[in-house]
Length: 348
Image 1 (cartoon, one colour):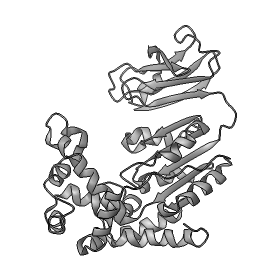
Image 2 (cartoon, helix red, strand yellow; image 1 turned 60 degrees about the horizontal axis):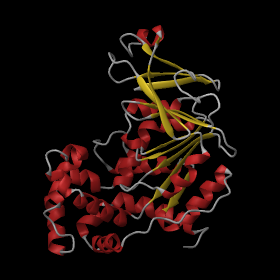
Image 3 (spheres, one colour; image 1 turned 60 degrees about the vertical axis):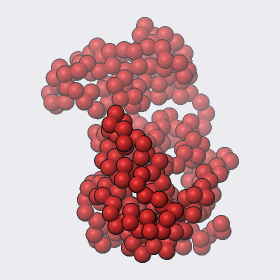
Image 4 (cartoon, helix red, strand yellow; image 1 turned 90 degrees about the vertical axis):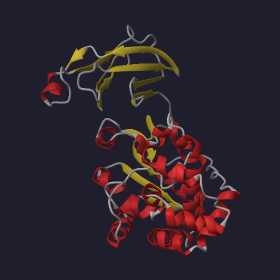
């Protein structure tokens, strides 16, 4: 899917959306002041879209007026979404304090960061959370489109694949690094929590390639040292990829299935060093404070989401497990370097 916004004149919004199906006619739904008021099909044909081979007819252009969208002209908040994918196409927000530029928060944990995005959501004209679930085409639109002049993006992406887009003026990249053993414990428990979903033929598709790993995790007791060791000895390939140096993989490879080598860890360190604001989860306040300061935002710094005792206990067991140590060599080196750098200027 591709999309673009030509203009918002108050009483007219013009945009185009090219659907994944080149034979389909695009549809958008529009919310005014938080209330869904209209669903509109594309009515205008663009020969350029057809000539580029993106769509069979080029009927992908929308001209939204008060006739289709009651209250459009005077509305302070208007949101236009693609009907099929629910992706935000355009958001009008008329309020003071809106920041310009693009900010990307790279999620490095399998459990997304929520408190900082919640604090920043309304500080930007358009915000996109969980971008790791979006298609490659949509991500490229978000990263390279000049009309997205005020946007906050967060999610788990493979960073080297898109790093070329981040060099543009006004693009701030940020990342919060987690303790590798705590993150491994979080991922193990994430798998176990989805065992029932993986075992259900009607729902297993929701987990994609991780369905096999989640189903496998249900047979093991992480509290039992022997069972935990057996898990690592017998785990299927999807579980291995999820647990093996995930931070180095995220910053050192271009595709999720790329083979990890020591060379990738060097690439990961170099790319992480080019990120605008890097923090460590142990110094959450320092990271959030630095980010808010870079953005010129005066607000109460959010508290981090508490880490459960179950996660911390499992992480402690993993620290003493040789196989876990071997699987996290690259990530430990990266996380320790970040933590040491932050610790020089902040206290926990």
